[in-house]
Structure formats: structure tokens, C-alpha cells
Length: 307
Image (cartoon, rainbow, N blue to C red; front, side, top):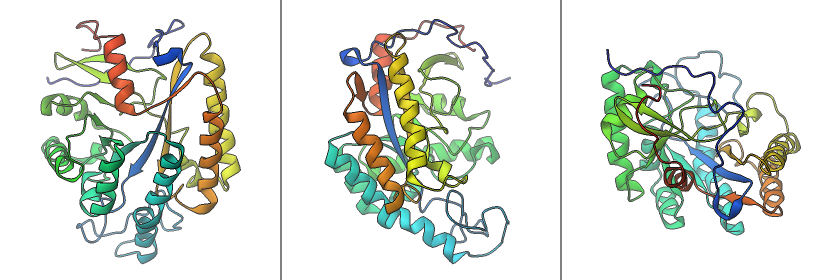
């Protein structure tokens, strides 16, 4: 039987390792913008319906067939307007940003792909398309991974070092990433606040966990205004910063262009960025930098890890 994920309910336990973040930082903070618009299920790509996930659409749970022009335009707002607004927020403050990039989405907006390349933002592969990988066959998923890698080499100028697919991986995803080769890490995991190693099909593989809690998806789940989101994520940061005096952690903050890219929500992001920049002992960095630091500071300890 080929390698399959196993559950680990213990993790680091009460004594997590010291990440030894640069400068003795208490917390490493990574901001992610999910670039999905143009790769979601759609009529143009043969799914027979318009995806409306993480939008204002009231049809997201109805299962309507055919084109939903309102839903399409909500996605288009993300790539036409929201992307540029979020990008400005980070560039004006001189802060790094990680792009979870769906490869087909970046093919369909060369201006955005070029801007990402010029800004030097690191790109973590978000799949060939914004689809549920656990619904793909193994052969389909292998093809999606290969197509995404080849495409991102063209659009942003280099192959992706990281991987994160929509919501959750399949039981094959991590093994297929190792099979493809060239990935430094994946982020298809929500169960920790520090990176950790696994042995996958006999090879070392680094996991850099992600968060759906410190995420603007809360707007689509009923959160109504920017002060609520700012309060939630600021409190998360403040707790981790406080705890980091003894046990430093990492923090992931997930953004979506069609959500936070709106004026009434970007204000919450501005407040969060400004709050974080006022604190001492913080390393705001890229996801790839966190992975590389962990590999150098806490190298692979050997086989036997979740084999």
C-alpha cells in the first residue's frame, strides 16, 4: 500500500521547540493573499455552474446550474480591484507578502503575475485551479500538480517552493508532492502553530501549518465589519506575542482579494498591519523564509516520523 497520512494527536506536547526566529523574535507573522479568481469552477471551464464561494452571493449554497453573472463579477472584483488594493497596503509599509497562487488564475491576469514577480513576493502553489483536490482521482491530481508547476514557472518566473490546495488535501496529495519533487514545504495542515517534519514515502518533508481562524473567510461566514475581523486577529497576535516571551510561535493570516479587497474591509487590514509594526520582537516574513529558517535551525531528525 502506498504512503497515506496518519493522525497525530500529540505533536510537540507541552514543550515545543524554540524556533530561534531571527533577532530573537517572539512571533513570526506571515500574511497570505489567496489568488484564486479565474481558476474557480465556472461555465467557461466546463463545470456547468458558477462558483460563488467566499463571496457576497446568496446562491452559494443553492446549487444552481448555469451562469450566475453576479457571482462571476464578485470574483472579477478580486482580480480587477482587490488584488491591487491589498498589494498597495503591503508595499506602502515595506512588508513581505506570500501569494497562494492558483496557476490558471495567474495565466488569466498577466498584469498581476508581473506585479507579483516585480514585487518579489514568494508564490506558494494553490493548485492548477481552485478546486477540491480530495474530489480528484490520483491521476487527475498528479496532472494538476505538474501543470501548476510548469505554469507558474512561466507566469511568475520560477517554480513554486510551497503548496496549499483548496480547503483540504486528498489522501494522495502529500505523497504526490514528494513524487513531483522540488517542493520545500506544504501548508495543507491546520493542527499546529509551528512547522514540523514528516517522512513521506521514505523522504523528508516539511509542513508549515496554515490557519482558517486568522482568515478573512470569516466575512463570508457572517462577520459584518472590519472592526470585528481586526479585533479577532489582533487578539490572536497579542496572545502569541505575549506567549512568545517563553515559547515563540508562528502566525498565519489569510486574505482573499474578493473579500478584504473591498474598501470597508481593507481598513481592518490597515489597522492590523499598523498595530503589528508598532510592536517589538516580531518577524513579519514570507512563508518560504519560515520554511528555510526551520530547515536550517531544526533539520530533519530522521526516519520514523509518521511513516
